View 1 (tube, rainbow, N blue to C red):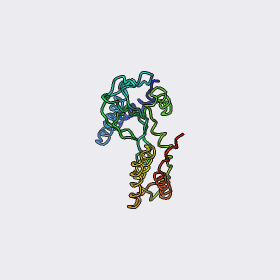
View 2: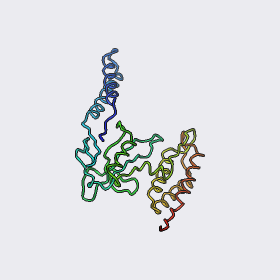
View 3: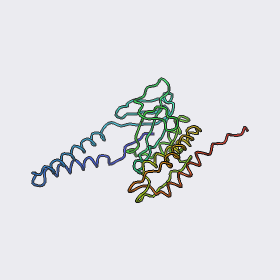
View 4: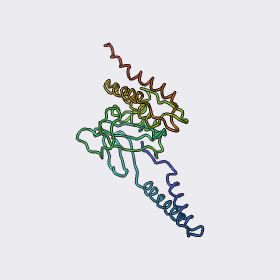
Length: 248
């Protein structure tokens, strides 16, 4: 499976450059603000355009991963990888972040800068690809990785949702601060998905401490009633130690 960039990625920088040129050529040309805005638009368009035109190739097959992007140009064989993770960072101000593909190198293997961590066991990892500009869906990519990477592959998004469903909080006036709530929910989900009792206890203690101190309130934030209910449910799930399997 070869991944492709989404069509239309050149449209925005082209519009910025064209708008800047129009501002420079139309009007009296004597206004400093108009000139600065025009030059800023052109500069922004050029920067984005250069990034969009950089060589890109990402292939997933039986041999491994073929990666050609800024900072990483090589074929990574499956034995060089201890884990491949489809992850999704925590939302930013309530806005979902784009999924990304992480790789945990096998012992003695160097792939690239270890600028991330495995979401469940916190092993150092490499960000292979941000899926924000990729045409193929995360579901398609996950299915292909599960086929070729086998047990090395983990869909952390699905594992979190299975452990504790993503709440859909309403946003309104005088609600709990969004980033604080998102961090507590994410920490609880990852603790549940990890299966580590110590991590579950730590996550529950963080939630309890934050609630005792009082969750901060913003002018616009998450519904306090919905958040309280979700944190009650999450705390209960974290307190419920997984039962040991009976021998068959």
